[in-house]
Length: 126
Image (cartoon, rainbow, N blue to C red; front, side, top):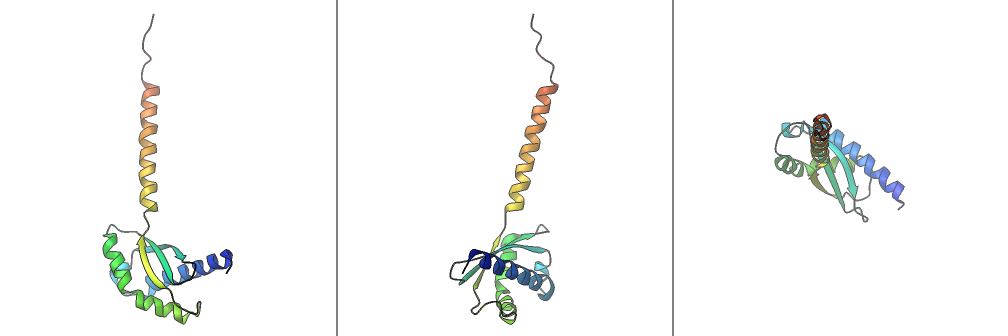
C-alpha cells in the first residue's frame, strides 16, 4: 500500500480515536487528553497512539486507563469499517510538548544571559 494511503488511514484513525476518547468514553481521567498521532506498522497489526495531557495528572495512569478502554475503541474502529482487521492498540505519552517547553526555557535563559553580557559595562583600559 502506498505511503500516502497509509498516512490517510493514520489520520482517519486519529480522528476516530480522538472522537471516541473525548466524547464516548465515560472515564473522567481521559477527559483532558488529546490524541496527537497514530502510527501503523507495515502489516497494520499494531497502531501506536500518541497522546498529550492538558492537565497535570500522571501520564502512566492515563496510559493504563487508555489501555483498559482499548476494547471499546477497537469496537468503534470496527464499526467505522476502515480496516479489514483491527490493529492492536498501544498507547504512548507524547513528550514533544514537554521537550519543546524545556528548549524554550533554555533559549530564554541563554538570551537573558547574552543580554546581561551586552548590558555590562565594558572594562576600562588605558
